[in-house]
Length: 249
Image (cartoon, rainbow, N blue to C red):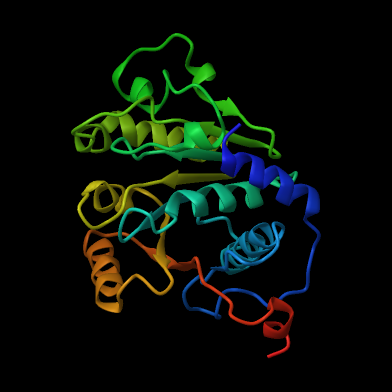
């Protein structure tokens, strides 16, 4: 089992609804604070807050396809994508699809410990007679995963194709939410290509590491490409006093 997958299972067992304050400022950015020192159940609570904010801000379900990216490798965009998709899938009314669009450095197959011999690459390049097998059902609510289908170079050709556009349109109609785990904006062009094709983008920043200028530039590049930036997730924030005190500040 993947370590993140196992951690999510433990967190779900310990999870309970809380009345914590929302992680999103009204009309502003989605801000997720997920300090590593918090108990195992805390990450799911935080992702749950982002889920609630997304649904309440867009009650008409206009935002269904969401790209999650970062400024650089290691910022935690894949962890955020997994946690957010899992929080969405906890709702029995929501059917969620999580797609690994990071052909350069795929990771979702390791997180969920699934075979990725067949995946998105096969859907975009081959007439596969067993396409349903590519949609991997997980044990987290009604959550499905499509792995990348291996490591491939030159992914822009796939994402710029009409075939990918048709695929995205099809899954948007079949699922309540479609979450795309994408490579970072800096150094990769995929997120700028995919951004305008989805309903919204969430940018993941690493607390204490991502420089303000870098974050602003990444956001600007996404918007210049035509993407709608929904907000920012602040990842790996550290608390230097007990968390229960922060709740009372």
